[in-house]
Length: 434
Ligand code: ADP
Ligand code: MG
Image 1 (cartoon, rainbow, N blue to C red):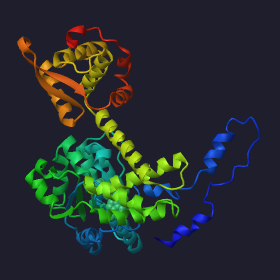
Image 2 (tube, protein in one colour):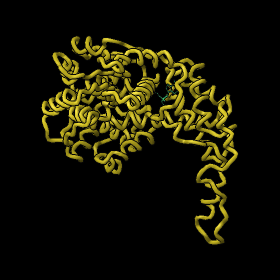
Image 3 (tube, rainbow, N blue to C red):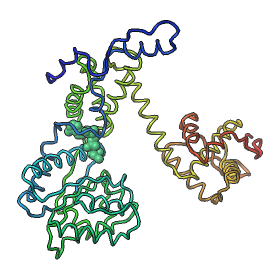
């Protein structure tokens, strides 16, 4: 542990003693409790997932390799494009940001004609935004909207050539760009250097999706992956080092015992060696301990954190489902309230149609709804079992696997669907109860 920890004995900024404001103050108790809480977090920022630490244990190799690949830029020649892949939480983003920061320091010091731009394609969203960010990186202004993509592309090309810059661009979560918009832009960008009299563009593509390569046109793939770097999942031992490093900055000494770090590391390693998962677990566990007014983080807080994170994940997964899948889930909630916990698929379809009518959307066919139900089954949200109903033939019985309150929470947060939760189904439920 590093010695900076010892400053924890002095009160940190913002912590002071509550002196009391006399009887009858409704906030008296609140202030007193908030200010007398044991101090667990010394620096909360450090536990945020977009924080890039000074040290990245167990990634020296990758940092060196990426640095090596980009090093020709420092001698004014264009580095190869790089393709980086590995599962989530293996440090890809952190390594690229770290290497960019170090290269930017030298660039500024030596006044080199280099620019480094990190773009998260999932957040940027559209090809236009990606191009606009690239232009921004070399000081070419483009409006938020209004120009054609071709025009923005030309401005980028012209800008690079006139200013004589080399632009090294990282396209993080590049799979999101290709899934939304195809690989046209990448094709154009990778070809931009051909016959180009300027310095040019090097691309670092980063993907969490290991099958991403299958989506790419072979020509794009071959120019993108002139070099490749693979990030492997962390082992439990490696995660312990990563967490210990973070914990020593983020928490007061003694607030997070070694066993707790080991447990978070082991749980995250058992999943798929995801450092983000390990850091989130420790952060949420510490927040739980803090809220409880406990002095240190313990195993029970980690267990609670696991549940909280799991719920958060379910919420996120369900929130992003398409409208009709959410309508099916809403039907299941209302049927359950009507006493039908395991409706047959025909009843679900009837309820679903009724709800579509209420919000004025065209219902999908029975067949489409069945396939959405199968998808939800595969996601583990519900269970759909084939049953034999004698002379009525075979049908499916459907029941929610996710706790109903969790599904309700998602529907409540959906602007269009939330009012449906107050609805009482008009369809005949007696048939289904039989
Ligand atoms: P990826 O981009 O591969 O999904 P990230 O780089 O975003 O993963 O890493 C996830 C989290 O774990 C981030 O908070 C990051 O700072 C942290 N992290 C990943 N690898 C390391 C490492 N070797 N040392 C310290 N922190 C790390
Ligand atoms: Mg990432």
